[in-house]
Length: 54
Image (tube, rainbow, N blue to C red; front, side, top):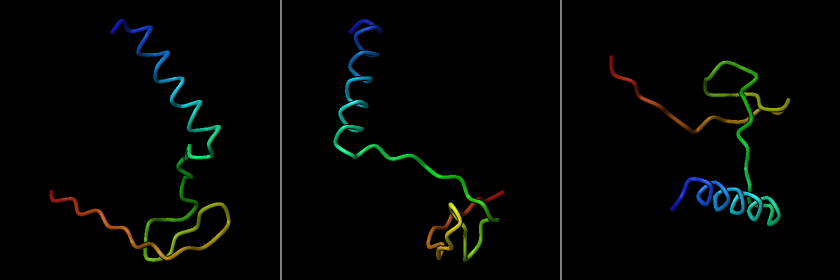
């Protein structure tokens, strides 16, 4: 598949997702990562975890 066809295919899929209301964007944290986080002025319980071994 030529790259321009791949780009057109991907762009069409993104457009379809946006039209269906299924396209999601990640909102940045407004607070440090911890048990409670703030996103767009609202406070949430953070149930995620990332373990990094150094």
